[in-house]
Amino acid sequence: MTSTVAFPAGHAASEGDGEAGLVRLEGVTCGYGGPAVLTGIDLTIASGAIVGVVGPSGAGKTTLLRAMVGAVPKLSGSVKVAGRRVSFGSTPKVGWVPQLETVDWDFPATVAEVVLMGRWSRSPWRPWMTVDDRRAVEAILERLAIGGLGGRQIRELSGGQQQRVFLARAMIGQPLLLLLDEPTSGVDIKTRDDILHLLADLNDDGMTIVLTTHEINSVAAHLPWVICVNGRIIAEGDPDDIFTAEILNETYAADLRVVRQGGAVLVADAAPHRLRAALRHTHDGYEHAHHEHGSSGR
Amino acid sequence: MNLLGEPFGYEFFRQGLFASVLVGAVCGLIGVYVVLRRMSYIGHGLSHSVFGGAVVAYVASIDFYLGAGLWGFLSALLINAVARRRKVGADAAIGIVTTASFAVGVALISRTRSFTRNFEAALFGNILGVTVVDLIAVAIVAGAVTAFIILYYKRLLFITFDPEVAPIYGVRRGWVDTLFALALAAVIVASINVVGVTLIAATLVIPASTARLLTDSFARMLAVSTFLGAGAGLLGMYLSYWLGISSGATIVLLEAGFFILAAAWTAILPRRRRRTAIPASGRLVEDRPLDAGVLEPH
Image 1: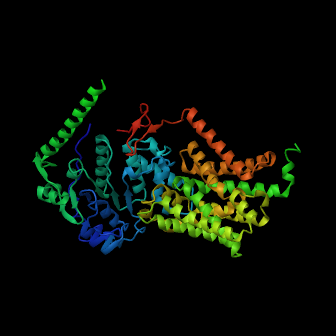
Image 2: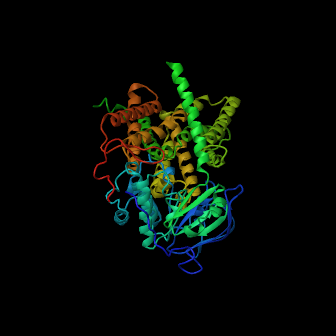
């Protein structure tokens, strides 16, 4: 049974801890050696906010997250987290949750071993797990409702549990900011719902969260604040305000329609009949060929 | 009884035994990282590269360990540098750097034709020719590499499991990769006299792969792989004395035998835990109903 996730209101990026914000990007242009992926990014994310980043593939959603931890070469501008200038490898107060698709599930690591990676810097030279480590792992696993699974190999868990393991790794270092790259990608509806409820709970406890998503209707529309990105910031704000055909068409370079009903926002292809007709045509051709092949085979 | 202990009466055997146990253990230890980082081919390539360095050192009258070690280290760094270029994969980088290096050795040999015996010893190992200096070199390398792996355990684990995310959590990937390349080159140089260029890759890869079949824990995999490597070194050396077979080949054949046994063991015996088949997306496909302990608490 899935349900609508109600994220707490009042965590918009423009609110919170004044002008400084927890995350502040000023005039950031960055890329990976070729043309700039993101240009002229000015962005402030307040402490306690939960923010979604949407945009088409290659728009720079993940790059925007990577810019917040200094993991992408910067051509100009400045990035600050909690008032500190960010450089690669020096932002330990940020927790990062990668896409599940990028994880090597065959890797021989137990849940506890993965979670402990998140606090390796506490005792970098000591290879073994201390009593303190063990307690910290158990506490965070309990908090994320996967207590008792510390000894399991990561492959042995369900999709939702696997996502929680990486959330646990991100949170065990007690970060100020949680960055999630497509946290609901490749999971079923029930798991997606669980993950969003969990993020809502964490945000309720004061955690600042920024996540990227491709799912406009099932994820982004529920968030209190969304940033539309396509090489630059097209718009940011409450999805009720910024999910307009004009903004989304500019973001996705596609013909989209926005339907509002009973307080809900639904973004749809403006001309679904064309796609349907194209697919039906392909299907009819396949059926015809299949029938021909079947007839001649008899 | 005296007959069984006969080989231990010879100093060359004791020295060879000590060297083969140390080489087996340290290759098993570092081999875990080689296998899990999917660098199996690098062991094969680097050993050939080191051969080129050994020949250059011989021709230039430089100390073997210094010349071959430096050559191997630079080759490993060069492979990393070439592999980072997006248009050249790591496998191609290894092929380019190491075969070119090997070709340097072959070219020099064909030019001078004065050290055919040394050439064969380097290719196929010459455990009977292990000197006290060789033994000391092997012991120093084994000790230094073990210390490196213990002290850098957490960083190596994080980088091996999640190379993209580890730097976000403060792990200095470039530095750790450089140290690892140095450690791997040192292990290969130290192993040349025991197993030879042609068989080093096997001593790096087989114990680690066997250990992977036997455990799902990273820490246990390190221990099992080291133990298997040392065991094969001990037994292989002893058997080679009685069977009159090359010690390097005997060690590798024993390791292959262990692998076959482990593969059979894991194939025949039911796994202790529920096994799952998970597609690349990371979603769960159960092969039997979930037990109560795996169900998500709701």
